[in-house]
Length: 604
Image (cartoon, rainbow, N blue to C red; front, side, top):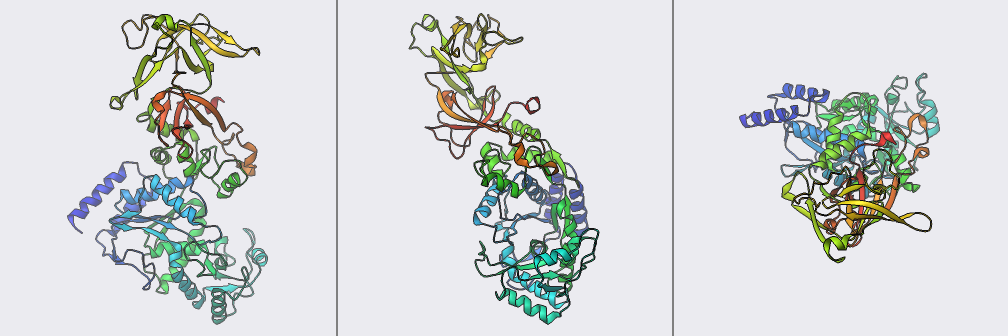
């Protein structure tokens, strides 16, 4: 091994230590130390297998991980942890991470999902291209090899074609307290099962008529080893292979083979696959014994999945939310899908920071939603420009405006930093006129204790403008307040000599009525009112938050006139907002609320 490679590996290990150690890093560092100085290995398999796989030697001093989604839906926040973990470990230890689609179920898989998954992995900041080579793979590219592997298992007496009905197989499987019963077809002989399997392949039997099963142990305490299904008949057009096949491998059969063919060194998955590991090892071991795979074989390691409070991540339940119209689609900003979170305004940096904050453990844990919002605020605080916006407007009339400026047509220029800590972003400009929009909550006829904003006789400052004194209000026939009345206190403009001569406790954000930009503001909140919406088998639809979306028309300061889709901004006092990436237009602004300036959910 060269000194250059030694230095690169040492650098990778130093980088790996930065996020903090965990049991997976300990395992990887142990394995890399054991592989030090070992000869390089070549790709296993017959010519034509995984022809798209990079040929040539495999470096034992590098790890290979993979993120293997099924393209049957949109990625959600739970997937983000697996993405960042697998790609992050490969990066930190100088290895390679594959993006591989486990596309073995054509009835539920679509190219739309393939494209969306690739887009979201890229959005999170990860790349499956390395050194000019693409590490993008599909399980369906291995179907020829998988079929040969299945025939090998039959020939070795390790698999058989079962013609029981699904109901009979289910009944004969047994349960945790009762061993299973052998199928009457189990021991009919190798030639019989080979012929039947080939008939399945050739389309001579209807869907569901028979399945190929592994021959392991129907009395095993691990129910996953009670002769699991390997292949089923499904006449469905596949997004990648078309109508080439009418039989498809089961996920649990295909997945280990994919790992082995791609020479994955560390097969990292969530805890629900722990009981599948014995079959994973059984299958790869027998295929290696038969000369179809080369040792050393991949090893599976399980970690605790990410569960975020106030969301559901079951694909079935997410689809139900979409199909029944509880949300506006997979990218609805209330959804925990990554496309929804992106549209809501969450940044990839905040998602990665949240994943890093959860750590890696061997047990499942719940993370409070406020952690995600905290990561988002930490990310945007240092880079989101500021602006004033009025979300619940009432008009403020400055009754002495002409006396102060000599004309009602005069517009008094005002300015404020685009960001208080980033002077390089410059100043934003707006102007004062005789009529302004302010928040309705900034006026009270009879103030409550500790209220420092506008009420008759009280003074407050217009942010970046003048101090004003409230003189009263106007009402309609129904007694509703239609305008707040105030006078300007002379010589109190922010930034001018003597501006602080009058002391006030309240500061009011505002937008000039003459230059206000009317905008649709979508005020999003958590989709559910309970932290664990489906806990204990509860119908999660019963705890949908009726206030998860409120749409209002508000007014924005003129600095946002040229805002482009997906730009993030802090509306002073209100929180962080984003110009909707789908509906926002310069002539019809639409902003989504991402999160408030602080977490106040517990106070609700």
